[in-house]
Each structure stands twice: as C-alpha cells, then as structure tokens.
Length: 288
Image (cartoon, rainbow, N blue to C red; front, side, top):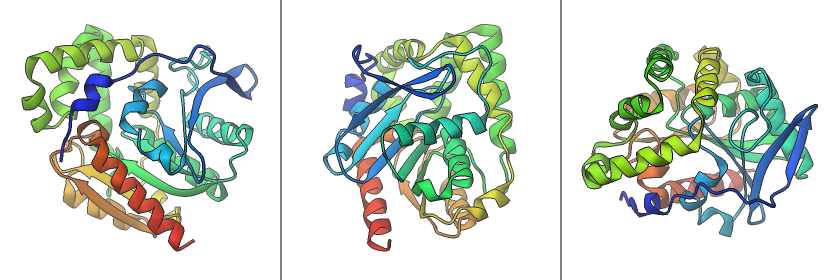
C-alpha cells in the first residue's frame, strides 16, 4: 500500500568526493554504486537526479549492486553545448558499465527513461539481463498521446517557467491518493524539490529530445530479454489494460500493477515497487 514517508526524506545532495567516469571525449558522468551482486542500473528521466533515487531504493542494495548516474547534460554530469542524442545516451550507459566492470545489468527506466532502456536493449542486447519499465511512455500502439503531452509541458515550461510546469504536472503525474494525503503542504514542499532537481534549460533540452524518440511499437518485438511493465493503477498515461497490452508486445514480457500509485509508482509505494523488482529479477535469474 502507498507510503509517502520516503518523500519527506527525499535527498538532493551530491557526494562531493564522488568520482566521475569518462564515457567519451569531453564527457564525465557522476555516478553512485551501492551494494554487491547482480547489477541493476537506474536510468533517470529528465526530472530526476541520482540522489533522488536513494530513499526509494534503500532495500535493493541489500541484494544487488545498484548503480545510478546523471545523464550527460543533466545533474552533476558534464554539460556539453548540444544535447546528446538517444544513441549517445545509450553509448554512455555502456561506457559506464565498462568502467565499472559490469558485464550485464538489469535496467530500470521510469517515464521518459523507459525510451533509453528500450534503446540500450536494442543496441546492446548482450549487456542487458532484463528491463523494468516503470510508468512507461511507450504504448502498445505507439506514443502519440505521450508526444502530445510532452509538447504541452514544453510549451508551459518555455512560456511560463518551472513553477507553472509543476502546477500542471502535479495532478497529472501523482496519483489521487497522494494528492489527497499530502494536501497543500505536500504540494508546496514537493514544488521546492522539483525546482531544485534540475534547471529550466536542462529540462527543456530533455523534453525536446523526447520528441525525437522512435515511436514504433514494432521495435519492442525485437527485445527478447525478460521485461516487466510496472504501472500504477492511477497512471494518467497507461492504465492496467494498456500495461497488459504493452507487455504482450515483448516476446518475454509481463506486467504488474501497483494499487493507488500514479505515473511514477516508486514515489507512491517504494516498498511495493522494490518487492516487485526483486520478484521479477529472482524469476528471471531462475530461468537464466
């Protein structure tokens, strides 16, 4: 069941002494690695940073090696003049794994970063053990609705700023129960965190990149690794029926629904999220 207590422990601070990893000429990525064993790599969408994962994945490092990092042009990683392409972001993931001597990993994408998870699996199938698509922006028939929403968000951001974008995002992305439970104090508190997580320029670049993503659902049929579609039953973008249909697009797909969770289900129920991730990985490893 939803537990919003971790939201009040949300961490935004970086480890000042953390090393960076050079992935290509002029690019160094901030990363954190916790735990040991089978690797899980967390992929940020453009609204998240590495520190924000800690309180929502505190159980996973007890069983796995959990790697999180900031994408190039976001957070504490190198900022270059031009936003990297999806292919360059995928190449960065592999360079990061190489530097950390990780032969293969499970990828966890959330919202927009499910596109990156898909693309890494397509470009580097031997490096991916499985995929968790949490609150995916991928659709069983395409991504038209997602693209329309992205254009709306980008318009609000560029014309009215970060606070206005937050006002639009909050009732869309967060579930009804969270909205009622947290009330006005939660809305205002999370607004401060949202504005602190990224810059308007970085976020705009990320939203523009999202509009360049390949949208064909046929691409999913080429991904043969175990794939979990994990959605909240209050996800504004993909409901339970859509999650089932999306999972069926993958040759080895399955789906799970988190009750009373919204578009980013680990924010509503981090414990339930981690239980489902562990269950998925244990089942995938047992058939390896």
